Length: 363
Image (tube, rainbow, N blue to C red; front, side, top):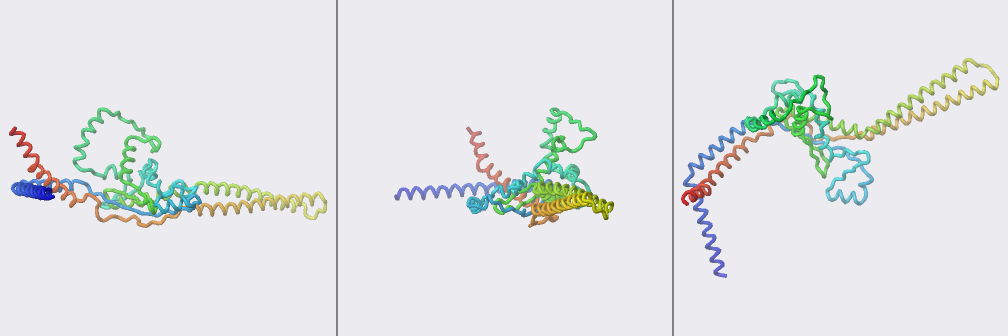
């Protein structure tokens, strides 16, 4: 036991000596460490000020969830206790909150944002989202250098796409420029869902604060409209059909009533049985037409109530506001990161790489 303790003590002393030697070696080369750190800080400043400012707008909304008989049993209760979201919240609601991110990133939804009009905060110019992303969005200078070889390769390998003069936007068949624009929009507009609370978060990242807030508000409105149209589609179709039947019943009732009134005007005072029979027949037809008209009117009211019932309600928890500070780049973090990396690189050169090269040279 005593030998093991002595061995551990000797090993600890050797480690302390090694660390002291490494620290002494770094102290001897402190000038080089300072120079490398300053160079790293300068590079970090160049990188930080070369990255364009990006402004983020975040909107949170809580959609209305329908109660479902399928989830009201013991299995649904256990799933909720475990924090698991049930996908079938309602038999008619197939677009539940967990699918909202897929809706936002879909091609039809992205193409619908091409023509949204936005206004820049700096100069107040009005333009569409596609024009802003094409003309007013910049990239760091090194992206041009990195992407130059790929552009050269694409210039020799790709074939020019001829776009007709009367070309119209079609989500089913996009051009290359339209496809690139869809990819850009889906990268800058993201949606996420809290699995426990079903709160939907819409994040929009743009290089203008007013454009970012405007687009975020538009995305939320378009998403609400999409889900509302989907959930009320059957109810609205039923309402249109009920209104059509009601109009037909109304016309039939008015015609039957008019025939009955005209017959009474022409045969007033006659006591023939045939005249009384025709009068009763026309009166019964008018009465039946009125009953049918009344029933269809009630069906229209029920259908209108059904549309109102199936229309979802959204609670905006965090509305869209124009951001004041840029979300990126984080200049202080970039500066510290590059300075630290330069220091670590210099220390690695002094402690490990340079001795290895010297040993290899001596051998």
